[in-house]
Image 1 (cartoon, rainbow, N blue to C red):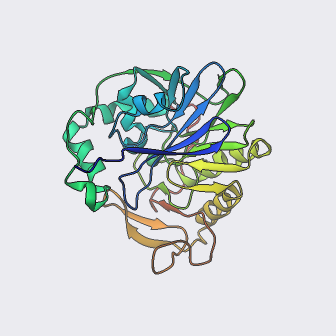
Image 2: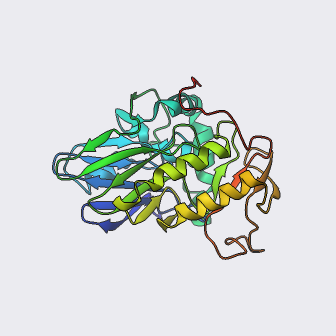
Image 3: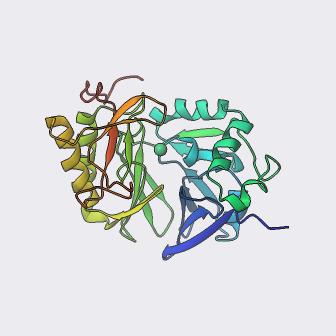
Length: 293
Ligand SMILES: [Fe+2]
């Protein structure tokens, strides 16, 4: 019987591993294991198929703490192989929503992304933990994970979700960026922040740019100049001068893409890399900084 390759890893720096599910097709999701002298930090937990805790044990003998860049299901699926996790308080409610998804539903989401050769082999069995309540600890802007010989800094970059964070490791020059700023930044959801606030948050991230060179995201990897493209593109949306490409969003709502894409969908027509979707009825909004959500 063909074994399902649940995980593979790529060493991207000393003591730093990019982990992905190796059975998926066209939809890569990345977790990152960052090992320090005292403990290791697992940044995001991808789809929840396979035992990610056991896999981390093959990469480090240090205790592992889990932090999520945000609470979307494709970033928290493996949380349930652990006892606890850290995330921004503004995403904890959405994490509770994920806990409310049925095991079959989440398995179904994950299975749709499997390569054809594995689709029939994947079972909703012991290789899939499903969801259950776990302890969630808050992390906010300015918090630091002190792993011993490396310190991972938390920076808030709300937009994709209100509580989206990035984690900066100045020792390796890596910003672990989740879905905060990439070639398909989704700001189309009901809980995405308005664009005026997202731009401010990107500008805030840019103030940390001397500490990193690369943006290792949840689905894509870019150098840090993607932040400038993000600021420029989102500013065009605010000015009303973006390409406003009408489309249907992931939840079937009417959205726009800020930049026209090539016909084959592989990237921007103008050759730049950043793109974003947004709800044209929610371009600007109130400052959310201290609002209870
Ligand atoms: Fe996401």
